[in-house]
Length: 231
Ligand SMILES: Nc1ncnc2c1ncn2[C@@H]1O[C@H](COP(=O)(O)OP(=O)(O)OP(=O)(O)O)[C@@H](O)[C@H]1O
Ligand SMILES: [Mg+2]
Image (cartoon, rainbow, N blue to C red; front, side, top):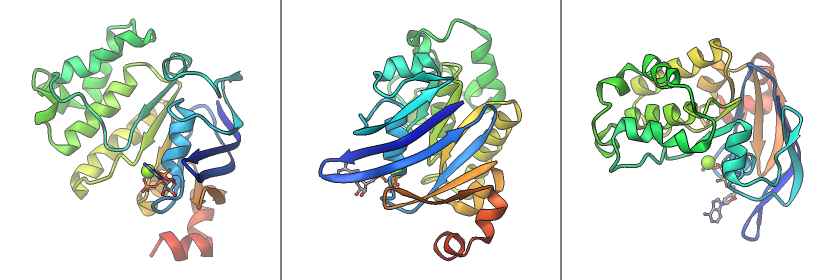
């Protein structure tokens, strides 16, 4: 269980996140919706230890991880797939995946096979340089690399960004499959229709705050959400 309470974070002079509360229970798929600049990435980066919050508390399975460094957050069981994917271009697919051996959370060789089962394309391309992969394959690799640390909670920042609709479907099929397997997931997504079709619970952010939250069917019927995100 990931719990975030009263989280605030700045971006330079901008208070990008203002006192938000959210939680991701075991095996749940929760989403954060919101338009550009709402503070979604700052929220995920703060949870992942990449950005130091000004205020608030983040706990994972009851342990306070609010002010831990990134590698200690990974060791505690969180893995972030950042916006823009960030694979290591000159390394092969398999080298990108096995990099996480250094995290201290990966000592089970079966995990690599689990990633290859989820993304057979990565297995086919295991010896290719990551920089030569398509955008969709790089997104699969970024998710695969995060899974290699066996995270308690997987944090995904706009995995659909810049991908063709058919490729977005492939990536979302994998997210749904991970959810089915019991993986806890916190997903940031601008495509509200898509996000609400897969999640258990959603949060809508606007200007650094949570405007409204609830199960997907409630959000779909919410006039404010309808007007702003579901046209
Ligand atoms: N590199 C930056 N320099 C200055 N301000 C930034 C920077 N990145 C984000 N901000 C500001 O911080 C606030 C929150 O940004 P954040 O990236 O968290 O939003 P987001 O919801 O992830 O948006 P997007 O959908 O565009 O990814 C915005 O007001 C934005 O203008
Ligand atoms: Mg963002």
